[in-house]
Image (cartoon, rainbow, N blue to C red; front, side, top):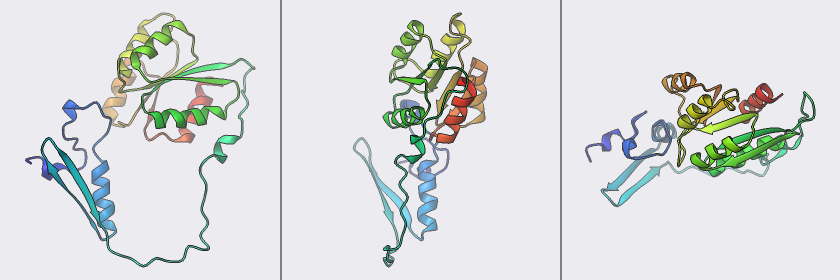
Length: 211
C-alpha cells in the first residue's frame, strides 16, 4: 500500500527487482494522461497477494454515423513486394533470438519481403548461443532479456569467439535509455533497435548490414 501513490508515476517500475519483464515504466503514466485528456480518469484497487483491478471512467458520448468512414487494412500490403538482393544471389542468413511471439511474427513478415534472406528464430538464449556455435550467420538480432541466457551475455560471448567476432549484432530492447545503449555498445553491439519494433527501421538495418 505504501507504493500505491507511485503506480501512475512515469518511470516507476514497482517490483522490477523480482521481475524479468521488460519495460520503462511509462505505460500506466500514458494511460493516465490519455484518460485525463478525454475528460475521464483511471484508477485501481489492489489486494496484496491476490491481484489488482484497473478501471477507466470515460464520459458518455453520442455515436456518430460511420457509413462513409474509410477503414485502412494494415494486415499485409506493405509486406508483399519482394526486395531483390543487391549484391549477388547468395542467400544471407539471419538469426533472431527473441522470446516474444508477437515480435517474432512481425520480424518474419518483414524478412519475407526480402529475397535471398533466410531468417531463423529461437526463443531461448542458451539454445541461441548453441546454434551460433554450430552455424554461420550474416547478421544476429538479440533480444536483451531472454530465458536461459541474457542477450548481453550472448553478445559478450560472440565478441570473444574468434569465428563469430566479426558478425554484426543488433540488440533489441524496449529500453531506450542512453545508459543502456552505451553499455551494450561498450560490449560490442553493432547497432540498437528499440521496441515496439518499427518496420522501416528493421528494413534499414537489413539494407545496411546485408546488402
